[in-house]
Length: 211
Image 1 (cartoon, one colour):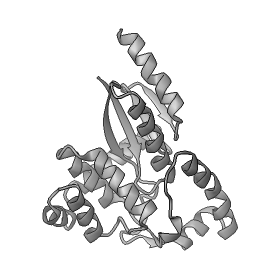
Image 2 (tube, helix red, strand yellow):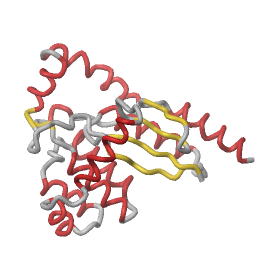
Image 3 (tube, one colour):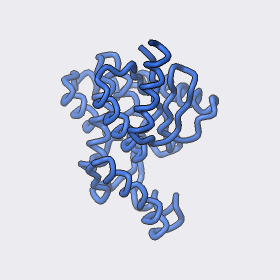
Image 4 (tube, one colour):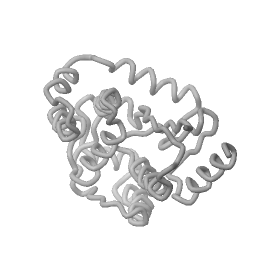
């Protein structure tokens, strides 16, 4: 088996798209060699704990409403190509994702890390839910058959918060500046939302080397 480490943020549309492309490639190669682990990277590490109004965030980031619309046109195009459902109009707040990353970490302990990533993407991009809200995160955990009361209690503490911050900082120290970033076998960094065809080639090359 080959380790595939994925640095991602649950509010990153390109991470959502990149995961969909990867999923398509893995479904086409059910005997693929990858063991997948997700790692935290916050697009907005300085975001207030309770998040902020999404429109204000986007217009501030891109320099106005029209610029924000133009910046998201490629997102819509690639999401359509990936067959993804996006309802960006439902999103009213841009959250701080520290707690969402904590949930992903705890789900990993339960062997449900990828399922948690998928659930967070769906909650945010399809349902427009505030994935910085503790009750929302506990409800997502419940949907994964993880004890929601335990998750809620952990979220109300500082458990693993510094670990997430440290891992985020370590990624930046390694030179990661954007996500998604995929690291194959601890050696080869593959940045961006890569199409299924690229992953098919990577899988084929790994098979050839191990033959």
